[in-house]
Image (cartoon, rainbow, N blue to C red; front, top):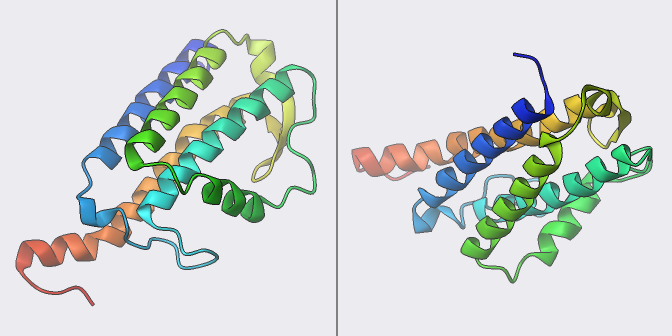
Length: 170
């Protein structure tokens, strides 16, 4: 299928809903489990905060590119940005984070739905992709979450398996 605004908007909506369901189905003890051990050692809860921060940043990035801007600053330190933005969400509860994520994702889907083919070909800088067409940046929005969710599943799998077979994870 052609990567039109409506198609990409639907992908954003569907994948956003899948993300929320994924997190809602986790056990309470999973929220504090450490998934990433570099930097600030992100837990599952921190990754949800990262989803919120990233989704909001994508709103700004899309708007910047559509308005003729160059996208993210060349000197943006993505790791530092992520650490800072996640820390600012420390006071939010998991339900609040999931609600914010849904709100920002729906706003992005609505924004993307009306984009023309010419809009989707506009180029701007993404801190991970570099200079890329907006269509690729939009696809990365939902793929980004899929990658993190896969890593969470992999990290939680030993604990989940040990609960099922009665052993203790190492």
